[in-house]
Length: 232
Image: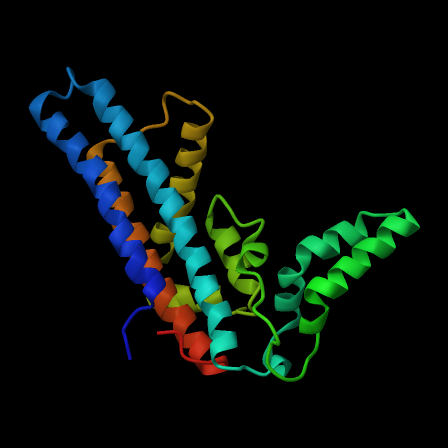
């Protein structure tokens, strides 16, 4: 059995482009930090935005891998928590909840039945592939609480205690860095010129994000394997 999932392996590969930006910034910093300050800031800011995007992509890909495994392994739906079904069809459910006109409401219910109706049963394997795109909808800006809530969609309620046990004394340091990364990324996206990091600080963030994803991968895959099927 592989040590990590393919989602984590892809994440590690994508980190390389973040490192390209960071190393370029560090090289300019060593050469002349004052003269190249604008370039250093631009490269470091770009690295932060990319890293946040790759963290988000990793979490989504891990979820997509889990959804695919349900189909490949013919997992009986009696094992799947109700929250999973809700998020599979959330876009339809939200539209139905927000519609008051009887004719429009009826049409939306028909659309739901045609698209997802066959999946809503608590017996037998899924007759069709649940939409990962729709399941992932609403997950962005991957702060820690959002990541925890995302895994909760699968019924993984012990994620926080599991990751805390694995990280031990480093738990708060890692979690705070996740939130800090997303906060700085959001400030950059909103044009805050003061939102930047030195190349050394970017390296520290990369290291902790990598630890977070590594531990998350191990915990989620282990939990998934114990409850449903192999994920790695």
